Each structure stands twice: as structure tokens, then as C-alpha cells.
Image: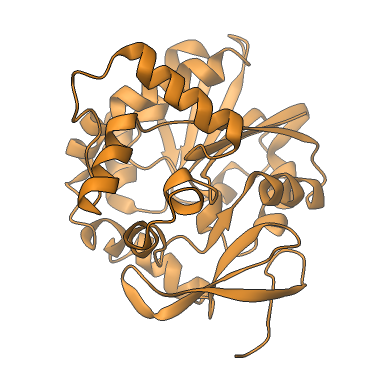
Length: 286
């Protein structure tokens, strides 16, 4: 087995998984020192930019609907995220979202801040968002010289080739005292680390996600970029989804068991968060 150095801390990593969704030739390695998992060999940056920007393979491979339909699907969770972020911001804040996707978050946060801007690589999505009014561009360099009170990245950092360098670069766009808000999938997700479902691993590891953060790895990444941060777990998916995974070994199942009480679902979610097995991580810089 070839010696593979960690993409974050440079220490030797161990083989974790063979093959990922949409790329059977890739492997996943894990660094026990910093808690980061990553693809190997690493897809080229130009190749991945084309993956999002020109061919829109990212959505087509998974059979996703067009941007207008994705916007409708994304709205419920976008409202939750907007409320979470708004609690940390003032009405006079100017914010920037990196990787705006369908524009649902920008749509929901716009009324809670002074101004919300977005960056999105996919041209069709940018065109759609401009029709919905948020100020969105296809290259962050178009904002050169402008400062933001906060920068938000929702399931974006796992797609970035050099996250430390990228986070350091974002300092050029943060005002004094400005903060980052980052949401990423948690590599210590219960389906992966607690239940250890092989089928979930086959589904979870995929070509677009170059990096897989644990809480430890995310905090270290931010620290290496010069940010102090608080990282906590949040549980996006419910007990039904986990039960269906355990029964069928396939994705889906959110809300499937309508008879589960809210108390039971909340207790299960709290257990996952408190035990470090939540499906998502939420980081705020200080």
C-alpha cells in the first residue's frame, strides 16, 4: 500500500475505503492525527471547476432537478439556516454567501440583514438568482475591495482543494471583526461511525466531496488559517431516515415513520449531537 500524506497536517494516513460514488477508481484515506478523511488521488482543481461550472455534472449525476425546482426543495432548510445565522447578525450586516446553489438561503436571509450577496460557479444558477433579486456573481474577485461583516459557506468547504489557503484568502473580504459561518457534513455521522453501514459509506463518499471533516479536523483547519472558532454538531436528518437506512441500506426515509413522537425524535437527535455522531457540523469563528 502506498504511503499517503494527510491533505491537512501532512502526517501519514491510512487507507479507509475503496471506490466512491461516481468514481470507482478513487480511494478514501483517513488521518488519525487530525481527524480528516480525503480522496486519493486528489481530482485536479481544473477538472472539478469544470465539473461545477461548465457541464453541471454535479447535479446531473445524482439526477437533481433544475435550479428552479431545487430552490423550492431547498427553501424549508434555508429558512432554518437563515434563522440560525440571523441570531448572530445585526440588521445592518452585509454578508456574502460562497456557493449559493439555488439561492434559497440568500432569499431567506435577505430580509434579516442590510444586504446579502452570493458567489456561485454555475452559470444557470447565477442567472436564476439574479431573476430572484439577490446580488450574485460567478467569481469572488468581482467583489475585490469590498468588505463583508460575515461570510457564510453551507456545504462548500468539503469541495475546496486547499481549504486553509482558501480561508486565509477570505480574510481579504472580511471587515474588522468579521466572522465566518461554516456548515459541513460530519465524517463522524452515526451511520458511518456508530452503525458502520458499508452501504452508507459507498453512498456518502463521492467525487465532489474531496474532504471529510470531523469536528477536530474542522477546528484545526480554521486554526491553521488563523481563526479561532466554536464547532458544534447539528442533526439535520431525523430518526426515520436512520431507521430506513438500517432496514433498506438505501438513502431516503426522512419523515417516513409519521408515528414517531416529537419527543422521541428530539431525544434521538440530542443523543447524536451530545455523542459526537450528528450528521452535520456548524462552525462560527470568533
